[in-house]
Image 1 (cartoon, rainbow, N blue to C red):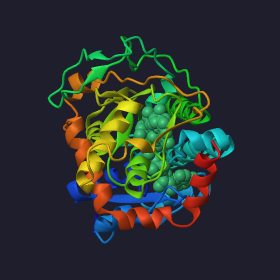
Image 2: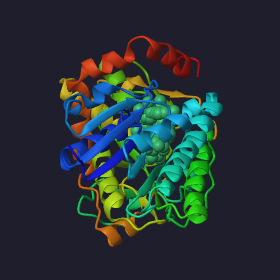
Image 3: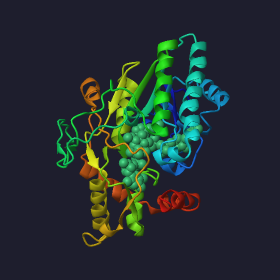
Image 4: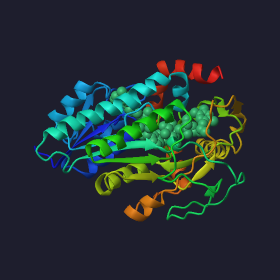
Length: 379
Ligand code: NAD
Ligand code: DAU
């Protein structure tokens, strides 16, 4: 069978990657999707059970830092597009183990860039019809001030704007905002973004970078705030709120991110950067209260039943105060908008985790428990 396109997705067994792979495999039966993931603690093939037997899907267990292997894969499958998501992604882990973040996020991205460069430059058509799409984060921009601590009405409107929609400051991250990363995670992502842009500027590689805000939804590893707290409420375990819970994040439903990736991969302008965000800022403590309320309601508990699980713990070192994305460039140039109101998205998400306890238990048994003890109980 010949395919119209051969697209390599890295990190496809992780949270966002699995949604991207699922979307592409279903939407483009004439594309071959090659998922390269070395299945770290965060990679889980159970995230892709529903599509694993599809004719246009291939999984390869490989480390993106293995340059020779990347060269082999890119040429063997005649790859013409790369959507690069593989990364170490958790800020708390980066504080404990920065080397692993530099290795995967910087050296891994460089290995992939160089493998693509060698293969594409060896072809008669060179970079014609090729695309290297690097998925990055808003954290590279640093942190914004919290000038409206009570939250004011957001200056942005979208079809999905929520009634609970707030802005906690007057500044927003733009594509032109200067990089100012603070954590080893964001520093490693910033570095990888620079390498990607350097491959465009130096070699003419057709690259694209997007910087997205916090994602939430099904299949997120339960070290991240939302799945961790949903599971802890269910198990009646403490909810470790860092600092005073005043930090602000801008939340986007993961399938809306995957839709944006699809659109930008196909329609985005080479060498451009696009910010992707939910126009949906929340203080941690407020989002935590919404999660508690939703889980209690769905479990049939009386209102306020789990409020006493909130436990204030030592703050994250260098904890960025506020992230808020201005994604109007993507909105006006390519017509993307978040499709889900936050109230809808969080309800869907809580239901999914409560209905998929087997998925959660497969992860939280064994190794995870050791990590969790170390990360939270010693705080
Ligand atoms: P994740 O931690 O859930 O998944 C990462 C995946 O990469 C895992 O499947 C893991 O096995 C794989 N991986 C790690 N190291 C690898 C290596 N050396 N070789 C091959 N595969 C490797 O991450 P996520 O939350 O899905 O994030 C995906 C990407 O999106 C990352 O680049 C992250 O920086 C970016 N991002 C995430 C968010 C978010 O809110 N989660 C927001 C913006 C951007
Ligand atoms: O902004 C995009 C980024 O969002 C991505 O690049 C990262 O890969 C992703 O992990 C996420 O980073 P955060 O650090 O914002 O996400 P996390 O879920 O770890 O934390 C969200 C907020 O909740 C943050 O302010 C820290 C706080 N928190 C987190 C945990 C895990 C707590 O208060 N308690 C917790 O136990």
